[in-house]
Length: 433
Image 1 (cartoon, rainbow, N blue to C red):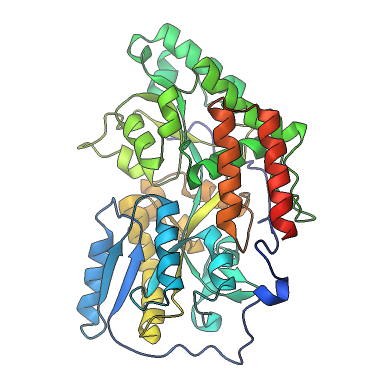
Image 2: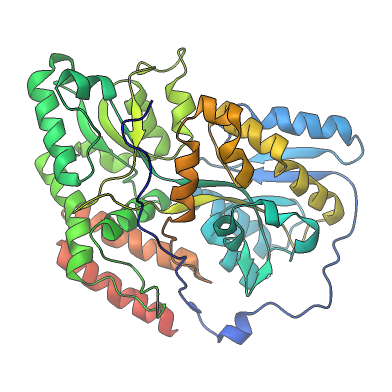
């Protein structure tokens, strides 16, 4: 179904941004323990962002049916990652036992582990050898496992294949220049596309903007943090070339002005309504965009690698990890719940029903999964080679700095040069604290 296999993504390692927010690395390192002992059995809570699929409760119901004395209750938070994180931090700072199992964005692990808000997990008992290695590394801090990867993510370019075909374009664009040129050609030749927006991503001032800005910077050959030294290195011509793509696209209309408010769900709604030609989005959109009840683009779209400045771009490594609150009761039950929620059976259901990218490596070659989502084997390659966001003890400060710089440039409140200069100085200050 795809014109272009998802291969050739730029390889990258998870970046390490050291000791933000005071104290030495040793002071931030969790206390040494001889063994991980998580005890207590009984009811638990599972704290997660808003479930838009309706599939989660089915899995919880199945768990509860088999564990009548150790039932799990879902606590749904906001659909915005930043607000989810804030709610979890507030609960941890209050040392409340209201939250048991936490559904964490992959980049939160370092912060939550460093502050001892989550418990170290018994790695030898959790079968991590069956999981994609990059996903497991997102759950570690000082080489100890604090969170178990439940799903992964790599950004994809969704595009209206039907409209490209009508305009005489035979393959998905590999560069930004080709993408914007394709938009112009489609609008000139295809009447039904005249009023559609060209490109959308996640540009509201939240975690999605950190992802999109980082991908743009990486696509230009730049980087937020030097992978070799762990030091900020974002004020470069390459980073400017990448971020300028988005800045100029907002200026010339290739990115519609309303996209500055786009989160994942707002952009998805526009793409599924037929209002976008190209959309940067996570894999979960695929199944939803094929839903005949809610989507106008069923059978009309395809996916490809993200574009770059001079060739194919690079995705940010995404996904979610499950962790256990340090202050929770019934941690032994929580460990079993983690095993259940990350089992091949549950992850396969998540893949088939809502298109989530599994952390279980074998599922990318599962015939039933691949039959429904032909891009899965290539997505595995993309995840294995995706670029990570900076790991930071105080990740909230780091991502806020990235968002403010990028948002200022996209909205024209500052130049790209000034935005990157200010961001470099801010990150240097954070890493020096």
